[in-house]
Image (cartoon, helix red, strand yellow):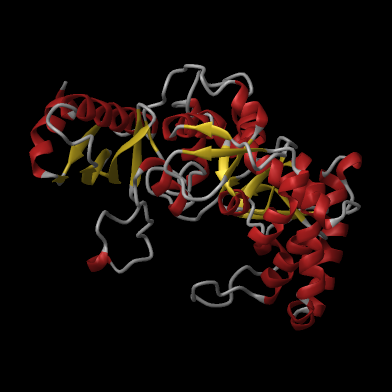
Length: 395
């Protein structure tokens, strides 16, 4: 690694490298499907919110196109290729990454003794029950909720989540939206079923996987992907094999996956699609602003009267840029865009016809995918874009 002579990249080159790494530039690998997507991205974030579909379904849709939702769900769960853990928040991860989270499992074992002490009897009972009776949901174990509060977990649910965090249990499938807890030795192949890797080995390999999934990123970008500490990333970068780069307009130094640099000049088809706000292309707000010029924020937890763009605003990706944001809903079999905000410079008169056509394409395809019969738009900003957008939707 030679920080004195970094590879020079333009902002456009860095953007294209990121899109290619995120499988949003170039032909989709339909043969690899969802399992291949999880391996390439390294982590697919989960979330409870479902508007058009759940976020993990939207992430697959954005890259593979309108694959049947039941096929997407079946590919995530129950094929013996993935598990759920704390990657970037709660995430679906390739099963091959099980050894790399040994450092995090050790952290929970060492730092969460108070948590275990509070539910000791439940921990032992839950573990014994699953050993004897096989995989179960928290409900099947005897209780998932004890109140209607934000979490409201019962002692049994707390115990199951503690055991999941420490690696004594694993979630490799769900039923409905409920985790199914099982023993790792029933799920993880023998060669991966260990916590033998030292902390730095785990973090260094996850750093490399972050770079592979991002293509190029600053130290905080690389740290955020698997929620590592930036200080650890900076310390491990000299041993990572990543290439130092300087990107025009980026204030901080960056590093790239060497394989991404090999083909950064290649051309490919850009995907036109709606993106989940939990998509790994945009889940890092600062990075999204730096690469795409869009200050994207999920407003689901913002009081309604304070929202600027909507409850579950989805960026519109077209031509490798984020050209708009849509706040969607499903109303009586129709995809209703509560609000569409067209972003500058996509809203300029010269670009507006192409912009409107791309937004309409993204909305119509999403509507067909979720089984809606049509698309309606309630509000458009700026107002001057409304006519072009409604005309494009009608074509």
